[in-house]
Length: 249
Image (cartoon, rainbow, N blue to C red; front, top):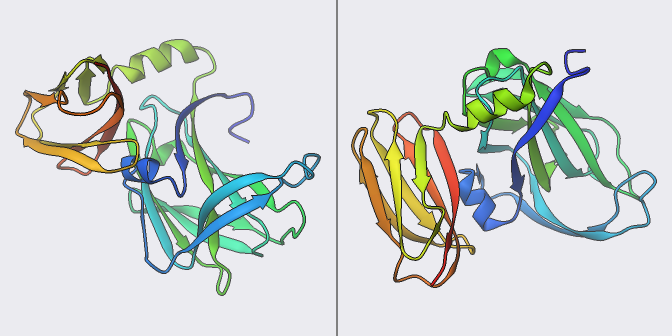
């Protein structure tokens, strides 16, 4: 089993139903999804500890973008889902290549919040900073449910710290300063065309722009209220980078 003994790094997470998270991950699904607002417990020994969960029941397909480390030996998706819907099954694609089928047979009507994993081999992920994930429901009458995703990158257990530090600096854009009183800069490392958007914590887009090639672009946030903002940068090839900025006055 190729994950045995591996070092894994949590490199991304997606909180389903949270507009800011969905926007940053380019999350899309059809209007036929059903919102889930649950007060339930995980199955297993914590079955009495009920907490609130939000997410979707999806009859067809969902797509989103995840950040990973380029020097990887595979990626693991962890999905938190509503196990009261039986026999959930879906095909998983990475960058439009079919990886395999994700199956959760059975159901649990008591502690029905469950975590499950899907492993993506390195042949689909190596050398990439971002992957486009597409999940196509093949369960028939049962929806595909999702409350939360976590993305783990597998790295070489002989030198995980070095691998992580190198990979983080290989992002296609540098956003600075991340704590500012008004202005931030975006510096591109290659000559691809790119665009940017700025979102507030409620997921509302407040600014956007376009730049050509390897140049530095400036963003003025001085007219905005103090708080946390998210900068999403998109290249022409579809890759996405998201960064958090704190605006102080």
